[in-house]
Structures are given as C-alpha cells and as structure tokens.
Image (cartoon, rainbow, N blue to C red):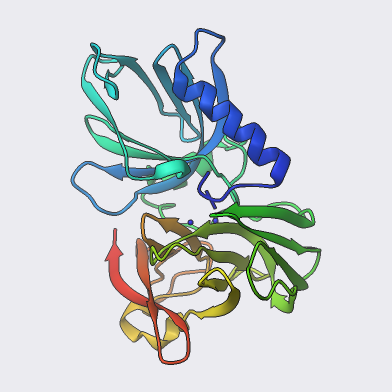
Length: 321
C-alpha cells in the first residue's frame, strides 16, 4: 500500500496534491508547505529497506526537511547552483536522485537512502506514532524487532479513486467485519468498464496503482489483512490489458515455497518498491509466541510476468535481516 502521483488519490485530492507538489518542487519563496508521505529507509550499501514508516516532507526555497515518525529528522540545504545537491545538518553531502518519477523522490544521504513516496496509503499519520512503534520500525530493541504492530481501532469504510495513465479505479469496501465485499469500478478503459464485485476475508489496508511490467497499462494492487491475531495478508490485483479490459493477477500462496515460508505466521505487509512487489513479514522460530517473533524479518520480492493463462507475480528474490 505502484499507490503513488504513485498511487494517486481521488480526483479533487489528486489535483490538490499535484498543485502542492508543484509548489514544493519549484522552491517558491512562500511559507514552507508540508505533505504527509511514506519513507522507505535503505541503509547505505543495502538493497532492502530497514523500515517503511510515515513521514512528512517539506521544502522552502530549495531547503528540504524530512521528518520521520521514528524520531529522525533530515535538514538539507542546497549546495551551490547544481540542482539536487545538498548538505545535511552536519555538513555532509547529500543528493536528490530521480527514479520514482511522479511517485516521489530519492534522497541519498551519508549513511542511508530515503525513498519518499507521496502516497502514504495504509500507514498511520506521521505524527501519530508512539515510541514503541518507532523502536519496532527501526529495530532499536532486539526483543521487539520484527514484532507485529499493535492492533488499531475499527477501520473506516474504504472508498477511494486511484488514477494512472488516464485509467481510474474506484475501490470501495465496508471494511467493517472479518468478511467484506470489495467493489472495483474501472473507467477509461477502451473496452470493458463493468464493475467487479467479490468477497474478501479481511479489510483493505492499502491500495497502490503501478506499472511493474512497464507496458504502458497500469495494474491495481489491493492489500487485505485478515481479522484475528495472525493478521494474515492477501492480495487482490488486476492488470489492464492494452488499456481495454482487466484480468486478474495471480499471487501464488506463500506456503507453496517451503524455503520462503519457513517460520511464516502472518503479519504480512505489501508495498510496491521500484518495479517489484515486496511482501514483508516477521519470521517465527520454534517456541515463539504470536506477539514475539525472534527470527528477524523476511522480504519476498515479486516480478510481474506473463503466464500461460494470464499474469503471475513470480518470486524473484528473498532477503532477510
């Protein structure tokens, strides 16, 4: 929870966000504007994120501030006349790098890289995190690293519209019980725009629109979390076929891969990272309780490929930390 902009929101919200980002990136002399965002943190030299957390992003006259929910704040000042070159609060060089397009920005810092995504779908507000949540996100406590997040309050009904490449998806669900009805209403397709209705086991916790296979037609990724202490994650996904119709994307059960699923007991999180779909979950060792996994974190990265009967998300890489 492409989602998303990377996974743009509803029409009016998308326009407001686009206008705000235009002001931010232009570095106007007006007051500093702030947007809620999602920050993926990559330690230097690593190709896997150590945390995916809420953050706020602001820019004024070229000065950039990134305020993370784990308590870390980055203050970047422009360096010279070269666009995208900065120094941080300690005078160390930092760089803004392309690669996310309209979905966000990448900042290469002295000790880590911060991927800032404009869409924070599925994350709590950046100022709502607690110290315990921050410790879990950063792995500061060895006893709580990788532990499942505390259960949140009742979810509100989900009803949002997402757009990419001129095609819109309205996604809605009551989100009020362990079994819910999911409705997808596409528009902008040259052929079939009929609504799709199906039953899901759980609630929608995030949605992203992306183009993982870079074919000029977007895909819709809907993240579902089951009720109960296991909080098992599942995916509902559709691909646009030549901008004409939708076909379902198949994600094989994690249990089909014995190595990747060893120690798996739910608490999945999904996110689009560059051109892969990442599935992250804590690893349980024998004797671990549901609330205290001790085996670290595993991330399975999937690429979207064409199968005999349609599109398949095929595991491409498994990393652990």
